[in-house]
Length: 394
Ligand SMILES: Cc1ncc(COP(=O)(O)O)c(C=O)c1O
Image: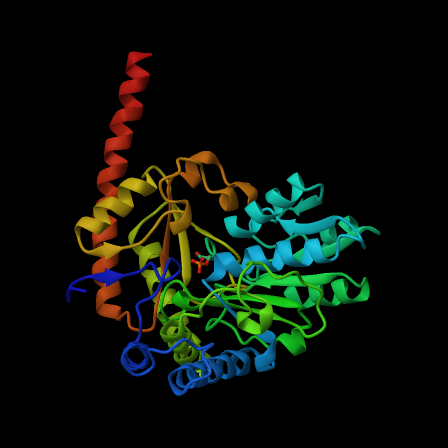
């Protein structure tokens, strides 16, 4: 990254930290064996996996035997939802999720609907928080699984997962949470929370891309997802990517050590940005819950200025933010999350997501805000001319 570039898209992905990179390099050079082989090279690779598994488990209060490595959050979500649903089909065919989940959850549910499962998609309030009462009302004798994300990736709102976990337990329903945006943002202990399955993705907390994990509580009935070899305790076939898993181990240990202090730093800089933007630019609105939220996320609607234009003009200045989420880039569909929150189409079209890391300085924020102010002013003046012209032409 060039020195003058400012990366404000940490919800899409984060930069690999130096010690994660070092660990991965070490693995690439020193452990070339297949972690399933019984010879020394295999055993060395397997020892790295054991270490990484122990680190991931410790970070979320699980046992190492409850952690399964995957190719990322998408695979872990697919596996948790399809694996639990299919394994418990004889008990019922009803699943509860929410309308603001990541596409890997929503699409997994759609796939299951084609197999005869029934899915209830609960709504959210204007702050992007799940309607808990709708979950209670939706539970029926056939409900076998509830899947609700811990924190939303577009607007950062935290969901009441502790209460949902309790509700699920009381009704003997499995509860899965997609915690991809929450690791390193809030303290998570699967035993205290009482969740049965939890999704992790390394690249959201300064680890490598293409690796993640699924926590599955011991005793949970879940089908294996990939057919093939007996890796991962015969639950997830495929030769394991040892350097990536080792990198994830280091990354999750870093992300969860001194968590409060790290989160505080990110919150301070995000709030500074929020204050500066509010002072510099009028007619803006902040999206997501004002307090019940992860620290790094700031989603703003800039009335009268289009989000795509803002993001592209910021890009030209070396400032990287996003509109919607990275996985939905290229689609012209308005954000399903902002729509579910009841945002007007005009506001949705003018929303930009800035997601911070602790390395961002106040000086950088000042520069970003000044650039943003000029961009929004310019775009608003163009759109004002367009509105004026269209009125004249009418
Ligand atoms: C909430 C959430 N779930 C799942 C995913 C998918 O994770 P991955 O990119 O590792 O497949 C993402 C990635 O953006 C996400 O934000």
